Image (cartoon, rainbow, N blue to C red; front, side, top):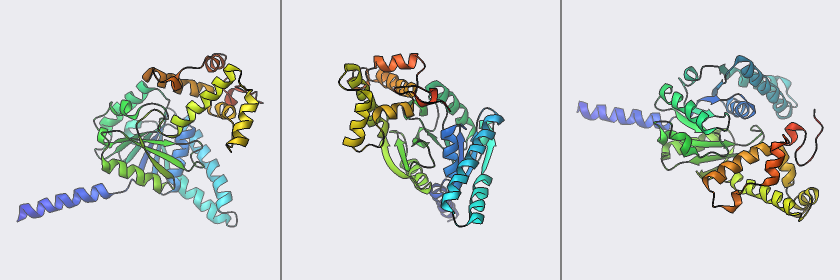
Length: 311
């Protein structure tokens, strides 16, 4: 009888543990994406730790979150300044900063990685975190172009690994692509979906294919626009105008290229071409390569397909 009771208790405890929602989130990377992820997590009641290499980066990250929260509060609490101040204060109080990643994951239910798009760097990071994080901790990458499976293989928890692909700017963009690899357990995937919904994002389910959903369609579309230009079929401005007025897109493909960054596009395209050299959609573009070689990355450098005034 005692054995039966103890077994029931263990099963109940395990079930209760599995049913627990994600409450504590560690975000690795304090850049624009990492700060955005931390902000939306904090404003939806999660305890958040942001990790980066220096206090200076982390202080700037927290300052950018504070500034963003002020903009949100100004709109959300336009007629109630005190409520707006409370909203900002409560969210900021849920965010802490750390330079030691191994310490930062000690209580994490979820670790979201938002660092440089370099496979080996990500793998090295997760190898270290895998030894430091509790067994129940779920790992996720915010990569937009690298295979989740290739990153997850650096850990011993592939069943507790998935992708959470947020879009920039995170506090504004409503979509979250939730990516699973074949090894991702149903429990893990359902927790990631629930987390996304708790962040008040619209979630879509994705397999671990190049670019997931959005970038898999978007990058070839932008590169095909470049190929049109390379062939002399139409001008940059006419192609942009055609897609805005003919297809109802808010930005033309070249405006979007410059916004995303031509260096980012090249990086994604090169990676996909290396993995899938037979796919003509992933063929490198001579024009794109030339612009990147000249340091013309788009808005961030002051010139891409269009010139921009540097701020």
